[in-house]
Image (cartoon, rainbow, N blue to C red; front, side, top):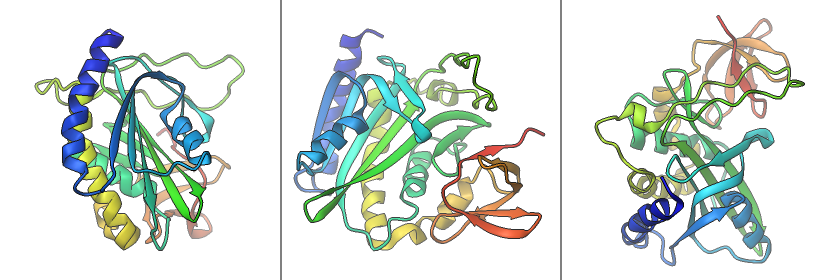
Length: 267
């Protein structure tokens, strides 16, 4: 898809989205950009300049997107959906926000989409997308930046640099593979997931992760599976705690994992 067509597609969704979300969040705005380094980075720049308005920033092309642990997320026009939702939030506890976002997206996308703790969307053990949640202090407020990247088409898996010894990343998959009959564009998928995501973010602000724990359990891709942590620990994933931490059943018993990245150990 050309950049012009991708932009027209996203602009077509913008007005519908604004009408759906503005009643939920007064002052809400939608901004569509042709090309940007990273939608999360741009909202963070604006937050540091004192801007904390509720805003959906979506780009047709992202050339320096960031995933968890600094990984790149590059998007091409029409092949993926990349957006960041910036909202001033005041939850009593921020723990589990990325998991709540994942629950909302998975439920809007497809019944078979699963969640890999803490921030990946999977379909049949293939990576469909990822979530990056960041926050910034703007005056007396705390501003949440919820970044989402979803494959619309299935991308090619790049070859790792020769000096990288990590396990290979999960093979990707695109939304068009899940719903070949629907054939939605990036704009169509954005219109499908965004209103529910805003409603669920408001629910998280009021109730915290407690309101999402059972819903996460229904989508948990790791529960009962052997996993290896980035620090070398191994065990069996055993669901998530009330604050969103991962329960790991290991040789020394059941422990809660808060910040480590988890990868599924090959069988």
